[in-house]
Image (cartoon, rainbow, N blue to C red):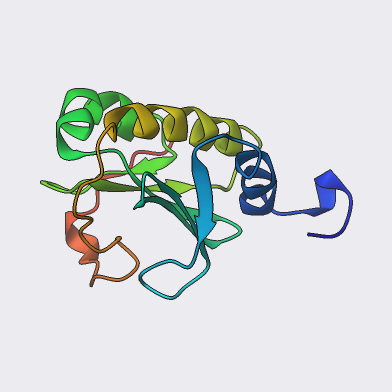
Length: 133
């Protein structure tokens, strides 16, 4: 990645930080778009564009924090899904993604089968719930 930190996208800044984390491995995303990070062999983060990422938090975690995630205005939650989409369109969104990635790692203590990320699946817009401040 080239350029000063401010000239890089939020996704590029997040990727640069995550490459230093022990146990996280950069990998090719199963959907083939962008870049991904795996923990214990299971993909947990897909950076599809500089301004959008899919994060596997696991369904129980998403269900517990559904309201908080949606009210952040940065996270798109879909019913009964392990993956959430983090919108990287603000200065604080990268920090939010880093924090949520840390929680995703804790939720993934054992390798599990990974269902396709949101990018890979058809995303019916009528089911998306995101609230902007």
